[in-house]
Each structure stands twice: as structure tokens, then as C-alpha cells.
Length: 120
Image (tube, rainbow, N blue to C red; front, top):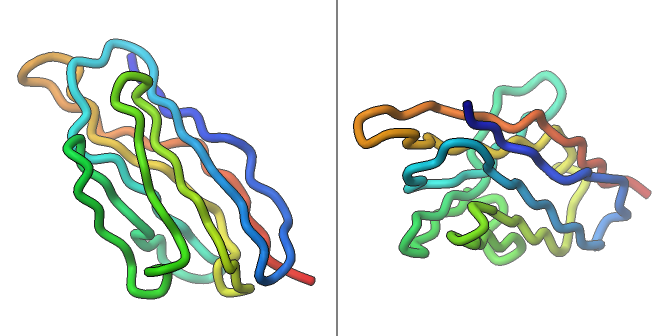
């Protein structure tokens, strides 16, 4: 069994910063891509950022230049540093990772979600 556990989000003023983390645990053989998604009220879940085990990154246009995704492959942890936050960044943030538990078994895993609210 594997799981992803996210850090607690929070309330931050516009222009502020917040950092999230997400740690994978359990029987882990390999994790290639780790990602952050978010879901705003009344909207579909969207990809925010993704990172491969080799360090290649991909960002949604709306967060480029403001958010930074990173990971620690030894700790199986992914981070999201969010700067210059805007009210439209408000939502529930989820981490995601297809976790290879055995050479030919992959479990698509999601964190429990953490609320980020950007408001004055």
C-alpha cells in the first residue's frame, strides 16, 4: 500500500508566499513523475506543475515565473513553492504520482488535498 501525504496549506495575502510538500510512503519501487494539481470552487481540477525524477519540469501558463516545483528523490517528496500569490490561485491543491510498487505494477496515487486561500 502506498500513500501521499501533503502538508497543510493556509491563508495568505495577495502577493504572499506559501510552500507545500507531499511525501510518498509505502512499498515504493520507483516514482517517475510527481505533480501538483488544484481545483478551484466550481472548476475542474487542473495541472499546476509536474517534475520528473530527472528534474524536468512543466508548469501551467498561469503559474510560470511564480511557482517552483522541486523534489527529493531520496525522500520521495515533492515540493511546491508559491510566490506572488493571487486570489485566483485559491483552491484545493492535490499532489499526484503514479507510484511503481513493483516492476510491473503502478498505483495512481493522490494526496488528500490541502486548502490554499489567497485573500486580503
